[in-house]
Length: 94
Image 1 (tube, rainbow, N blue to C red):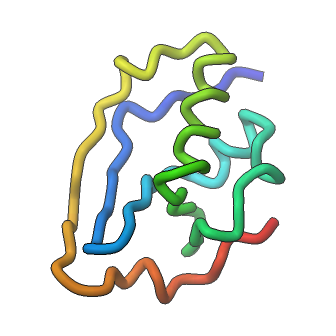
Image 2: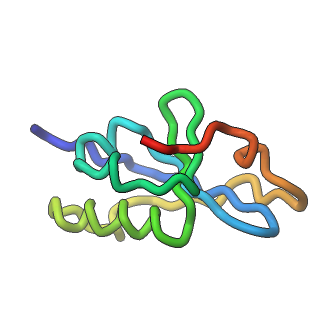
């Protein structure tokens, strides 16, 4: 199976935490869906990986599949001054 590497990932923050948005299919393709913690969130086909453990999980899995993290454009978006709406999305508990 060929894994499609996203050309960019978007990082969202609020004063207390941050999340990296990625497609659920990418997690499935990498075989890490069941390793993502309940501290991440989901909405539709997008998973918002919490910045401490789950983003590292994604990057490690990408590197294991031969991808270079430097090849992914990271973009910071929506740095909320108050509580991010992401916190109201469904918890990601596979």
